[in-house]
Amino acid sequence: MSKRQHQPTIAILASGSGSTAEAFIHATQDDRVAAEVGLIVCNNPPEKAGIFARTARLNTLYGLDIEVIEISGRTHPDGNVGRGQTLAESAAICERVSNGGFAHVALMGYMKMVRGELIEEYGWRPDYTSVYQARMTNTHPGPLPETEDTHGIHTSKRVLELGLSRSRHTVHLVADGIDRGPKIAEHPVEVMDGDTAQSLFDRVQIVEKAVLPYALGKFLQEQGGYLGNSRD
Image (cartoon, rainbow, N blue to C red; front, top):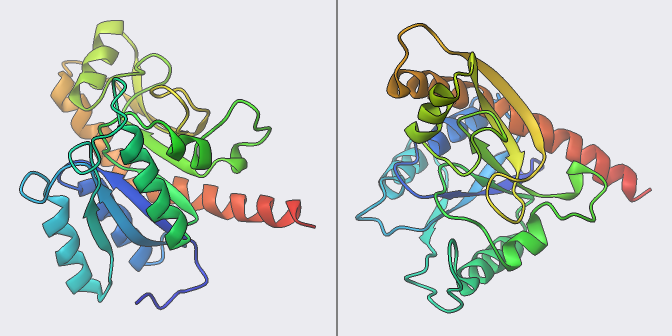
């Protein structure tokens, strides 16, 4: 179990290898970010997603007990009304996060559009007056809104097609739709002469893994102050 019980505990949503989640977990253990990871939800099974084995190694390395589970349209097929999560999938994730008492949900390489109950309970809603009222963030490898509804190397390809002088690593709140919530942090990555989509994306990924822990940690700290003051 964690030795820093007073710190906020978060749940991560991921889809693939989990390299961004690993970078964040390392940061929680060397005190670069004042948070703990308690749960990882993956929308793919262990044989298709390396995050299961990666987290097992991190649990052994640090003496952690991070649970990794699959919740997907395969495990919860009901309510498939189009693109993204099924409604049953969203509700199941929301239930696990709520029952676990997690302070925040962080999407790190999660390749599905979030919808339904999870958005209602943790995402950004139009009636909110402060970003700190929302409790779900996503990391995106490009500037927004210019590259909304893209992912991975396709985001860097869009940057080059648009002729932008720089890309950005962006952290934003999750809202209804794709890449639509307010931005809470962004970090520029210059486009260099001769850049390909792959070379630009590689540099954005380096920035993402380096700065995401600080950006999310800062948001959680400020959110704690906001929520504490709102109760006064």
